[in-house]
Image 1: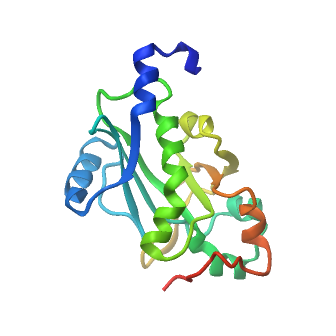
Image 2 (image 1 turned 135 degrees about the vertical axis):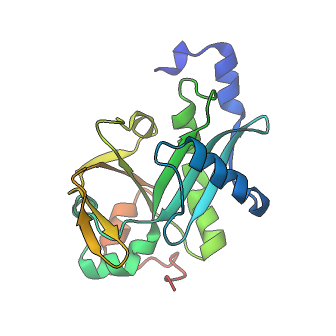
Image 3 (image 1 turned 180 degrees about the vertical axis):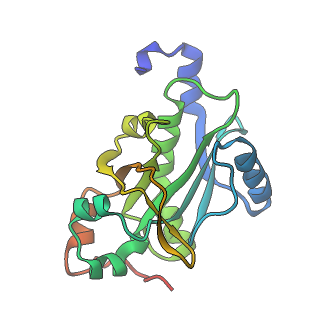
Length: 210
């Protein structure tokens, strides 16, 4: 829906949306709300993680969760054009938007894409602050046909194709679940794709994963 169709109240509300990392004391509340209201529920996230809340006049309206990138995904690897060696060395420079939840009774047009845009503006700096290195590419997997990924597309994410319908299970390798997903990517720097595939690392990448 175009911004021109918004009411004046909704337009004003969009400008008052703020997105920030949660405080340590808010973690239990975040987890509980995600478990209660996300269609997949919630138990944990993989690897390095960041949890965010979107607020409107200090009221929680949405939750976002970021985790380590998928270990491998053919559509992503083809889009970047990197070797398996570079993927292993630089995978920590990609973060996966594993959860995005608009809380009940809080949705209105353009809210989701606005929240995503605000989150992406600060994601790399926040990751640098916590883990000592930036993020140059964001990824997310959209369960089609349940969802279309419209809010991601409205926030200028790039659709690069389908997954193969496999998931990585601890201790079991990759297990076929028969539900391919759409992979959407968002470069956090205009040169992200080139940086990830070029032989020499960027000087900004100050820390490798432990």
